[in-house]
Image 1 (cartoon, rainbow over the protein chains, first blue to last red):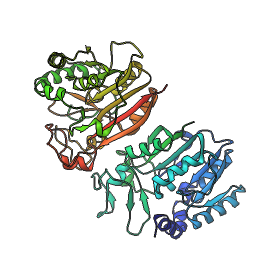
Image 2 (image 1 turned 135 degrees about the vertical axis):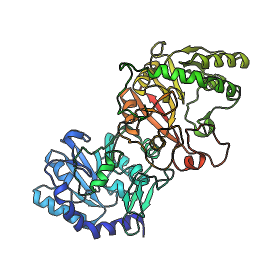
Image 3 (image 1 turned 90 degrees about the vertical axis):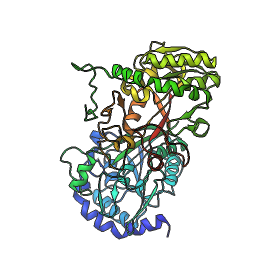
Image 4 (image 1 turned 120 degrees about the vertical axis):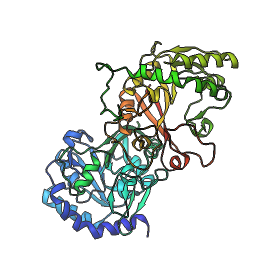
Length: 249
Length: 267
């Protein structure tokens, strides 16, 4: 089974439970990023979305895209899981909005070249798709000067996962060189790259690097994704980061 | 200051403290005799990056330097500038330590290769704006000067389109390095957020190390585009290095002990 089929099966299986567990945490009335749901109004990653064509890679139940539509964007949501998109369709119907939802893997998106001003993901396809395939797709889908922004995990987080104890600790358990595809026995296949690899991948696909925002959760930050212990770890070392890169003119 | 790390604040100028420039000059005056001994070898060879001696011909971190005006920030014995000169560049070397510059001058005479050497800190270079095509630092100002001061200076010194290429230690190595001058292990011993000024117990010098995001913001904020980040993996074979504070080859094959930022000033 290929990685994208395996991750599709995983998300079809886990979608209901995922949406139930995180419903309140990620279902708030304004756009928020990541595991600690920090508001976009503070982080200012996407900027003004009014009138822009916006593609969300790995939209899940489309919480983000629905809010962006409310801010005047023309969103399209892509997800690899049909079950996730069923949740998105229900939410879309409830919102009274309408925009396209596309069932596809981010490695191969059935949409035309240069049709978006912003391509983004919030712990979306970037965590579960092969970066050497989805970053070129994002470059293809963006117009010149378009923004690619995505939040995800970090190399440090991946290296400090103690598999036998099933928890984060302050020790390097994995090699940094060669970091890419991470396989969990019955979980999804995940991807994370060393910093230099990300930079070369962006540059090689015509992106200029604008910023790497490493998220330090504020004191007392809550998450349905992370334990208190893990949040304490993340106050010392980056467990979440947002890349902002722009397609060259 | 055993704590080895201030939270991003620069302590220089605070009452009763000696500036990091003075402390590093003193430390490097102490190291200078050792470096004088190694200088003839370094001057004679091909330019290799870092303690693992990875040749530039393999890493290709630099543009074709022929005909370029280059400035080496924290040149020490100036072996990098000597190599640049042999490749057709017009180098200038700057360093804060007179003893190191003395060695550089002796090497210039010995190798019959003459170029300007200036005693100055990379944080305040007495040279005109827009006068260089390449600024380079290999374990020079790149780790011994405050990046919030020397990066703006490098930007000022470069012409539009000019290259800034510098080697620093791997951020992950710094996180795993103890307060004493001992090699990194596998445990994260200091926080990432706030990484800036780092001191090692028992050594006089003050180093500066930043996280990835802070480097990118600082470079971008000073008009540089980030072209590449070359993280050096120690080669499988070779001589051990001679630095007590740096990890051995086994560690450095798994995690980056050194990284080269390859950047360019926007036109």
